[in-house]
Image 1 (cartoon, one colour):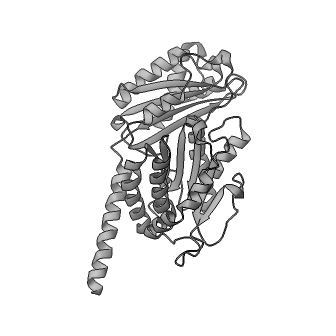
Image 2: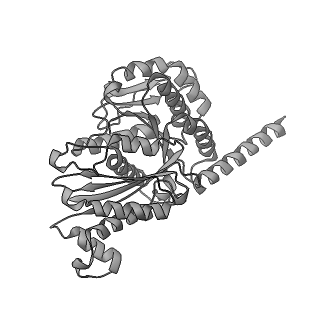
Image 3: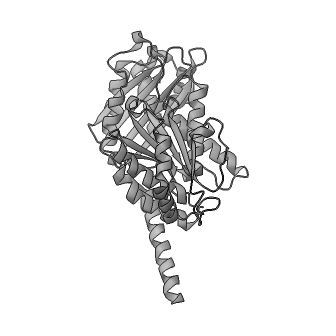
Length: 376
C-alpha cells in the first residue's frame, strides 16, 4: 500500500522520521518519499535524520501568541493551522496523490499541536482528496498532565469521525515512565510502533512467481479499515537463522523444551505465530471480540507461508474475535530471515483506556470550571 505520510507536531514528526528510516534501511516502501512534517513554532528545527528540511513546514512563525510551540494550547493550534493552512497545502502540492492509495496523518493526541492542528489537517485533507485519510495517533500516558488527557479526548471526538480509520498507540503499555533514560524509552516505543506500521502497510518488490491467491492487496487493508472508528494492531516475529529458528522458537513457546518437529504441521506453526501476535502487546489494549473486522498478514519467505496455515489462522481468529469478517493475506519476502505476523483489529468499541481518558478529561474540565466559579 502506498500512503503519503504527514507528521504533525514534534512527536508526530519524530515518528514519521522513524518510519522513513526503516524504509531507507530496508527494502520495503510505504510512502516512497511522499511525506511531510508540520510543526508550530517561531523557529525551524532540523532534528530529523530522514526527513529533508524541504519537506518540513513550520507554521505560526508570525503569530503573536506563538513562541516555541503552543504550550499545549489546542485552541491556539487550531487557529494557527486554519490561518496558515495555505502553507501546508503548497507543500502537499508536491505530493502526487493520484499515484497513492491514501494519506496517513501521524500525531500525538495529547499535545496541543498534534491534537489541534492534526484535527484541522485531517479535515482539510478529506476536502482536498478523494483518497482515504487514516490517522496514527499516540495517546498520552498516565504520567502526562491532565491537560493532555483533555486534548486527547477532544481530539478523538473530532478526528475519529473525520478520518477513515484511526489507529491508536497507548504509550503506557510501551514506555516505562520511571526509567532513567526516558528518551531511549520513547525511541524504543517509536521503533516498535514503526515496525508494526511498516509490516502492515509497506510493500517491496515481489517476485512474480511468489504471487498467489493469498497475496495481500491494498484493497484488503482498505476494506478492513472501511468501517472507520478506532483500530489496534498486534504483532509477532521470529528470526530464521539456519532454518531452525522458527521451529526452535515454537518448541519453546508451545512446550518449553525440545520436541520432535515432525509433530507440528506448517498450519500449526502459522497459527501459533498469529496467536502470539494477537496475545502480545496490542498497540491499543482492547476487547478483541469488539472488533468489527480483522486482517491478518503473514510476512516472510514464500515457502513458509502455507495456505493451510492461513485457513487455520483465519478460523482461530474468527473464534477469538467472534466475527466472520476476517481477511488473511501474505507478503512474500524471498530471502527474508524473518517471519512476522501482524493482526489489524478494526473498529474496536470496548477500549478501557479511552474510557479512562475521557473520565480524566471530564474531571479536569470540572475542576477548571470550579476554579473559575470560585474566582468570580
